[in-house]
Length: 306
Image 1: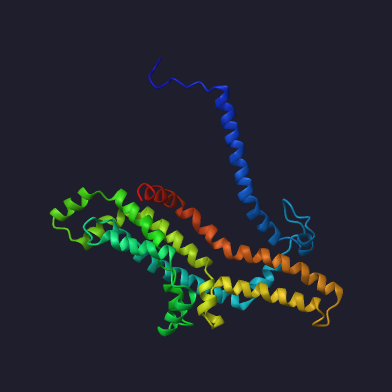
Image 2: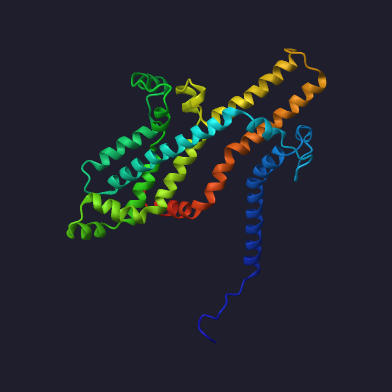
């Protein structure tokens, strides 16, 4: 018998275990994927069918009325542009600071490294609160500016810890010593050696920052007064609230609306809800597959050491 040709015989218990595992995995996939699928299907179905609850597996009464009402709003495209600007600029700032800080904290020759890291970690659990932060932002004259949306939330201590763990586990101390013996400076070592081999963790931090900025709405709601600067999430919220207000006013007799028009408005609100979800999430779902391999690898490597 040739070496390497021996096959391990699978027992009945192994087959049962594999079958149960497969069933559980399929069940988890269905539980996670079906709500996303349902939202997509409901967004292109007839409002009457969606409101009646008869929708299950496939679109019924194909209709784009929800998207027509959402995409027809001129503020939507301004919101998209604002969100793209906030996401790109905020991600650049966040990734740059996070990678630099993570690398600095990974260096054993950094004076006061443990004390500084402790101060950073302290801020994860305790903060001054919203009111003091708002007063500080106001004193800096950053209220109603795009700068404050970019700065707030650009750096996360959690992301710095992940980056530090990656550098500790992936950049051997011997590599640093060899580079310094050859006359390499700290700056050159970082940009020419560390950064090229840190693509996985850079992709992870980029994904974390980009998703956080894309979904962010609270900071804009607190610090922005000009609707022209609103990100996509707030614009979609306003669109949805406007439909709900019209629905409520019509139901309370706030206008001359017959019963048929009121019923159509009630069903339209449901379709608009699903359309808003799709419009907000599709760009992220499109980008994610291209950086998935870096995301998985970076998280696993960054989790080796804490």
